[in-house]
Length: 172
Image (cartoon, rainbow, N blue to C red; front, side):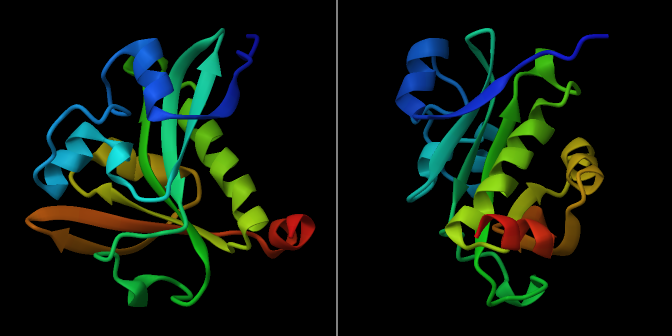
């Protein structure tokens, strides 16, 4: 079976909205709670972030936001090295028709490859703790459970991947 060829590129929420209409990348929905932010996966709520898209045959099939600025509700003491510089990952989404085909993993690998270029030694994220599919996904791609937090009644699981020293030294 031939593997599909796809690419990742930096994208803006405006570009994705123009291509695909309102979606998780759009700033149109009103977000009132953390639970709603997670349900809507709206990366426009993030400060100083970059949005990346997985593109297949000119169509966006997934996106992820990344930032060096992390939410204040992440508990620093739960990270393996709380003082380490890390990229935060937010709102990984893959169109349902393309899920389970490697696009989410592709986007996460792309973020991991960027981390050393920004002098980061880890990638961190939170996931809705009541979503077994996302929890299994992050564990399957070698992210360690770092603890569970509750944000305004919304259970979140913190995940972290400390990058291999070889990768960090190779790029930085």
